Image 1 (tube, one colour):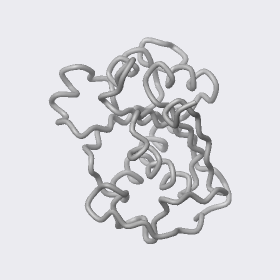
Image 2 (cartoon, rainbow, N blue to C red):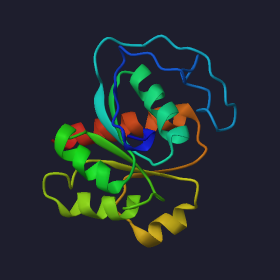
Image 3 (cartoon, helix red, strand yellow):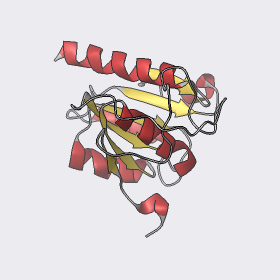
Amino acid sequence: MSQQQTHHEHSAENTRPYSHSGAQSRSYPGSQTGENNMLEPSCDKFVGTVLIVDDDPFNSEPLEAILSENGYRVYTAANGVDGLERMDEVMPELVILDFMMPLMNGAEMGRRLRANQATQNIPIVMNSGTSEDMVRQNFTGYDAFLRKPYRIDELLSVVSNLLKTSADRR
């Protein structure tokens, strides 16, 4: 099985090679700073469950490490088809979708999530190197947009705020 076909589950209890010191003010690897320092897990309890759907491990692995080290239970999928299968398995509280992926892109997966009563209210963060205008032409049902590269503090703020708002609506 290739790396893109494997599933990952990581938590605040696991350490990963893409950890960051001072994660609140630095960028993830491949972005502005590219630093690979280690950060001890910051909490003992999970603060939310997140599914990352991205075909590029260079993007998904650092994102997975950052979120898990900040208390999130994190699952990954390599494309929209894989992501929909993972939704049934883990029912995350938030989904981070890459826009351009093989088999099923983030826009199509997002439309399917919004069309399904069981997943229609789960917050979606669209994550792409392309412009938000291009994403919006294909899918408008997302709750937040992060253009790659982005800062870690921006990512953590968006995820935290969306989970808080989502929990308030329940």
